[in-house]
Length: 139
Image (cartoon, rainbow, N blue to C red; front, side, top):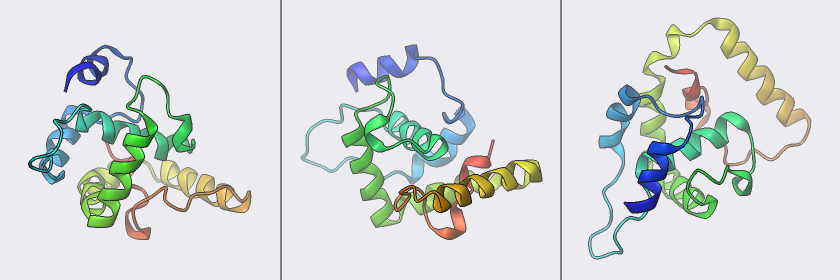
């Protein structure tokens, strides 16, 4: 995994980064690398961290911070995982602890999402499905 894995260990964590416990919960849900392909150069955990960063911050793909994997790589995996149902399963696994969050946090997220829609911001592929939109409220 090379440079990106080393970068993940040295960069400052973002609030949206997965905890060790969350990573252990979702790692088995991610599909393995395809046989016969190039060896993976980007750590899967960092890909998920970058997706979560984008979903929490609302930034565009191209505005992902430079200490995360390249936006094109992150976008590729997000689209692939969304299409094959992987992202839905990840969202469900991360939502297991949602009930432990304060109701105010959820209201704020809903309000922010409504504001984004009212302001005409693009959010066509920001989230999983309607039933899993608040996955980022988990611990």
